[in-house]
Image 1 (cartoon, rainbow, N blue to C red):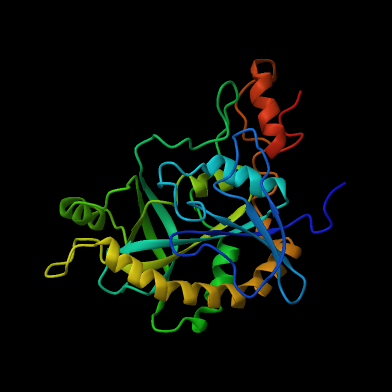
Image 2 (image 1 turned 90 degrees about the vertical axis):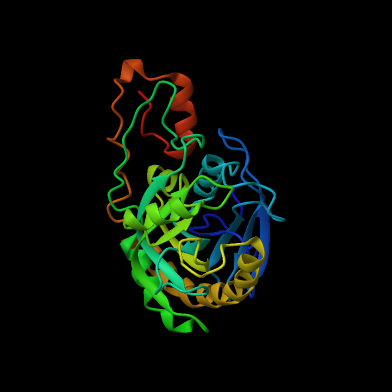
Length: 300
């Protein structure tokens, strides 16, 4: 019998410095086994004062023991989908590639440039089942607007939108030459976590918006000390209190667009006809795994 709190339609993925949900009532902890393994850590289910259930997952695991390349993104997204998640708010620490995006500012990116190295599994479709997901606009316009409307709750920093995010492999920071190259690409921010997370959310038909928290100027800025872990951690602590404050402010609006269906407009059902593999050529094993994620889509 399904737990009474299911489905949980809203999830928060916490990045560096954001490892829990404050001010919410603990309900349960789940750790489902998916066809792609287990998630980074157990998923915490919490309840707001108005009774809305929210799932929280620490991207790097509680205690931050997974490198960006080691994060089991497929298991993370599949586990969240399995409990009913339709919208993901993904927090991430980022470096700034622009003067105006200061440390401790918050930013809503609208585009991603992929500079990972192909060593992270980045699709659910493989081993005998091929599909192509739309990804021209990697983030949710609906969630972005809900978040933007609450930008005034941020203290000690500014809020920006419509920026381009570079996702690099890591775990090392950039060289100065790379940092200048990313600026020449049109990049405004840089992190190590947006991909393949955003791509997998799209394949799973989940609305996804990353909320970036600037911690440093990377290493491009003349006469500025190159980024260090110490500087990042100091700004992470300041950003975390703002992240908690922002989360409290946006949850009612996110709940509203999930319940009225707006969050999934253009997403729900989008993968049903994205499969290119002829029915008779589809691997039974691949179809079986995808039945966990998108039931009924690819069975013959």
